[in-house]
Structure formats: C-alpha cells, structure tokens
Length: 169
Image 1 (cartoon, rainbow, N blue to C red):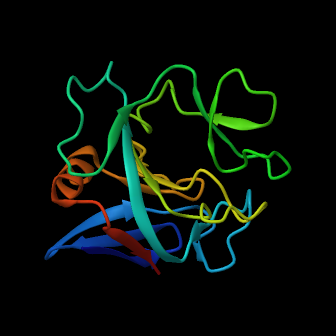
Image 2: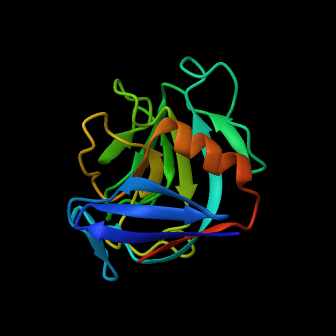
Image 3: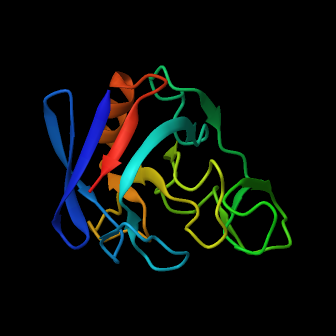
C-alpha cells in the first residue's frame, strides 16, 4: 500500500490511504526535496515504513499492525549529529553525541513510525529522526516529521503491512 501526503499549507497536509483522508502536520520548514539536518522541513520522497515504536507505560498493548513493533525504553535515543558514526540511527542513552530522546515527557512519541528516510545509505547532514508520530495538541508544526491524531495513526497502522510506503509531496 502507498500512503500519500500532500501539503495544504506550509506546515499542514492531508494524508491519504485506502480511500481515507485525514489531516496531518508537517515540519515548520514545509516539504523539501533537499532535506538538510536542522532545516525543520519534512523530506519529499517515497519512504518505506520500517517499524513501530510505542510507550508501553502509556499504551497497554502495542498498536495493531503487521509492521514490526517494539516498546520504547527510557534509554532509547536517536543520533542527530552528522559527524557521528551512528548518525540517523538508534542509540542507547547516555550517548556522547547530540541525540534526540525517544522517551519524551510529552505524548508526541507515544507511538512512532520509523520511516526509511536517509537510512540506506545514511548520508551525513541529509536529515535524521524523521518519523510519523502523534501530533501536538495545539496542532502546531513538527520539526520535520509527520504528525497525526492518535486515532488516525492507530487506524493507519491497522491497515499497514511490511513493504508499505509513505509518499511525501
């Protein structure tokens, strides 16, 4: 299945799959084909859905999906320092290079879909930690990810299987 996103404003869009269409938020830098680390843009392209992570302390059961799933641990991070050998890869915290914490105080990463952006191969500086995750409660933009309402993300995941891809732009 191909899931498609089209922008409706610089940091907002519509996500479409299997005849369904929902609102999503995008990066405050809009959609860009030339994604760079720190630009706040959501990358344009076709990206395979890799796996799902979830907070087991906030969701009793993993999301219903045929994609691989794993719980997020308090020691989970994601390296976003382009000069580090583990750039755009999961890391275990504490980690010496700049990174993002996957175990967040807010609910944004209660459910995270890892997409195949800049991962095969990883190109230093071409963007890291670009995920589908829960949208902000105020509807604000992301830092370059795709944000969805909890129910919409759960509905999407229930329809997903290995090999499905997200087309942005």
